[in-house]
Picture 1: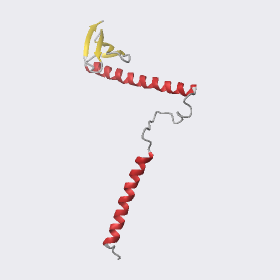
Picture 2 (picture 1 turned 180 degrees about the vertical axis):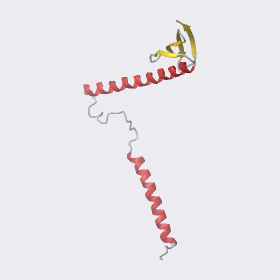
Picture 3 (picture 1 turned 90 degrees about the vertical axis):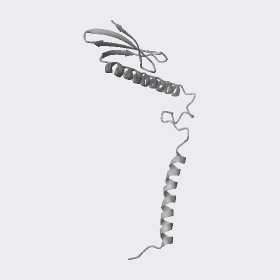
Picture 4 (picture 1 turned 45 degrees about the vertical axis):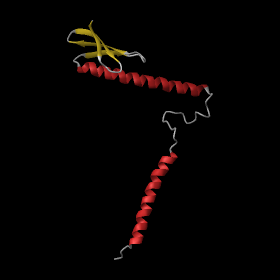
Amino acid sequence: MKTLSASTLKTVVSGSIVAAVLAVTTGCVTTPSGYNVYDDIYGDVHKDDKEHKKHKDKHKKADKNVYSATIERRAANKVSSMGYRVKDVKYKKGDRKIKVEAERGRDDYKIELGYPSYNVIKIKKD
């Protein structure tokens, strides 16, 4: 059985470490610094194109809808945890209030929550 000498073992270990460091460094270097998943990769080529502007606007609107949906879902969860059954939630971007229509038992309620704290501002029996 052949044994490795100390110098051969050091060479193999240091070579492995260098290979691992290079693999990690290469991954970091090859990713562009301003990379964004939602950016159009052909944005520089088609900046003045009308289709490009429509595409960009469509994504902005979609992002707003996703954001509003999250706020409305959190408000619905808050009101549900208070024992109400949620019927409708309304939130407009930039508004400091979230309006929730809910019911408890046979009674309908209009509940206003503050944004971004989701604290109850007003509960009105409808």
